[in-house]
Image (tube, rainbow, N blue to C red; front, side, top):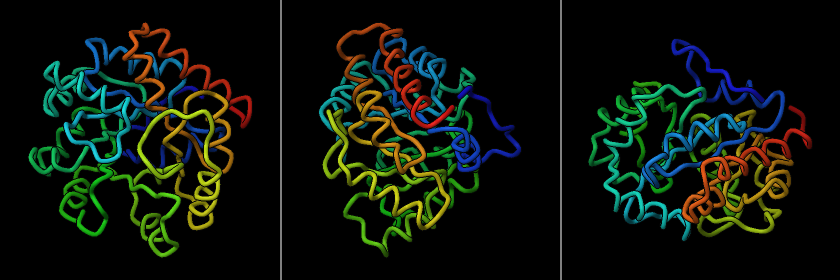
Length: 269
């Protein structure tokens, strides 16, 4: 699917993803800000390879759900001096062809300041946030600030999420539901647990909100499997592993392209 932005005065992450998912499965690569000097070029390359949106990881020293690869990428970025303010400042100097979704941990948001963070996200081209360690029950202050700036806060659902809690997640999420494919931390895997399909079906039975699967997507095969009952997939650790291994930007983007082709062949473009 080719990328095209919704105009700013009608900006809606959920609307954008819903519209694009009507013609095929969504693909959302993840890039750790500052993982190397050309991280912005990595984002551009992923977009050119077929990304519908980009998840930008703002590195944090004490991650809650990140696996070994994302942790390593964060350490590299932090050691290079990357900060939340620098990340958003560098993003703001460019225009990207798809929405950006910032993923980080709430302590950074709290220290940055809710209003300031939300405003700077907009300036950086971000349409949403993923804050995995911020429970819905205590997210009110952030969500209020985010809503004032049209930033949609994405909520996560896991295989063990109860039916009652899943209803709350679906009703309150912004943009999409992040479907966690398996219990544990992030990381590429050879197979995707059937729990991802079950959970995606549970989400879709409750709402037409996009359901996008993350955790364990490592290649076209796992992406196609994970997307069976979902609206798309997130590819993170497998990409960052290539970056950490020193692969070129083209080689990193080739994985995005392979997954794009696989999803389009399996589910239409």
